[in-house]
Image (tube, rainbow, N blue to C red; front, side, top):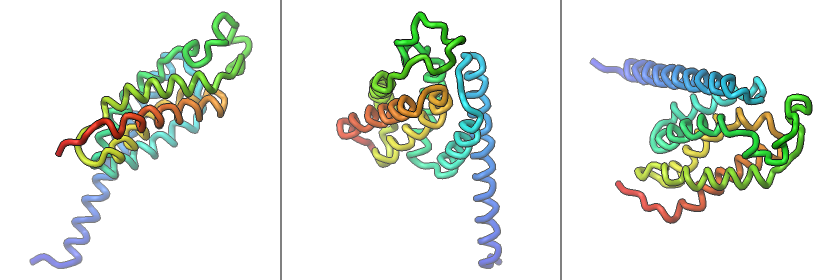
Length: 181
């Protein structure tokens, strides 16, 4: 005989299991991103790892279309982690970046341009099921949570340019792609 207490206990157990599964998956993804950051020698701040883990846990727990988009964004974010600094800051090419540190020059417009180009490409990977806006937002959250590890070695304007460019590129193509059910 089912009672309200049994149903509530089963629901609570189910939600805790989903949250635990989401946290484990997020920890694995952030661990892989950490290894990529270390292998690429990318400058990053320590606080980006727990923030990315929280974002990834929340999007995985939420599920649905946003999760499908975010999973594709994770992969793109890992690729973006390995982007050479010469692509994001061409004015640093030929300079001794090790001696000057991360502040050899700033080019937010270049980061925004790279972000738009990558965002346009990412929009082709957006899931066609469910809400297009939810899928695009999930895609952006997935790539931004991982790519933010790359951007912390840049100035705030460059990081915002890259994130804004990614979002713009994804949203520009949003009306062009029809969803299928």
